[in-house]
Length: 478
Image (tube, rainbow, N blue to C red):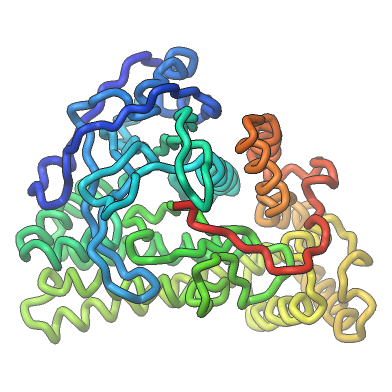
């Protein structure tokens, strides 16, 4: 374990159109309020010593390797030139096992890309990001992670005064689909090649000497995104802002602002207050993933073939694989969620029928699969319906056909069905308490969320919460 940061900055080898190295904007009274000891240890850092780095986590220390990234993005379908308007990458950290990660501050002040914004963040949204990213990690879904939250001691204006905060988060990199869009729009073909080669060295180094490395690189990104989004669907997660600037090349999730997990199952569920048309609704996420990847493929076309026609054929081949990989991952995961070890013909119809019953009875998504796992069939909201009884009978028959002992079936289901998720009412309770200076509920919720497959948690964390008289909404927190 080391007590000293030794940042690198391989990203700065790219042309300076990709980044800006501006000055820091220190705060007066930083206070460390959340720290991720587990993550620090996995990075090879000595947690006790690193917790004393409040000035670094607050953005008060000038670091030679620090920079903000430029990128572009389709935001709700509209192309815009963007950049890290309130984020600063302190540098790249190489872990003891040789993995290179970015360490980034969010809310550390204005940058060259702030477009008039103050570059700051509030306590509530940073607590949400911390909670959701840790929950995702515990669920086994690739994600950036939160290392620390620091209160700045300063007020920021967000529909009234809010307590300021800076989040420190760690990611495999911050290369986005939008980074490639920026290279294509603001740079030259040489910049696209340089960025692609950098991304390959960073994430797929085995492809560096491959004759068709750009095609294979696109294929790797397709694979990672197909699996990521399928896994989001399988746990009922709705990201809320699947803009191309929020899609990492690494296949990790990021920017957990207006996101949430479904309670009541409905394919058209939307939580984000700014998603008025439902572009990023639960059911649309797989299609948006494909659309975003098509935007990446467009930037790589000059690298994929000697003629435009050849390049388009190569791109389409890889994009078609997205649909195949997504469906395979999703439907296999659904089969596992109902206790089926291996899919066979007819299983997709069985799980489709379950989702139809859940929709019609307004079933809780997570608790339906939890009840199936525990054998609490009578608690299913469709258990007394004739079509519900028919489904239960068909399900039991299919389970029996596997010839597996019941304990093996239950083991499969427990691996794929979390008992607890970040329930919206618990997340809101933690946020409200944190905004008042009490981080106890956040720490208590984190303990539960770090064991999502533990079926011994109290009913308090399993319950979907009290009925609401109006739809639950989330906000970007900017």
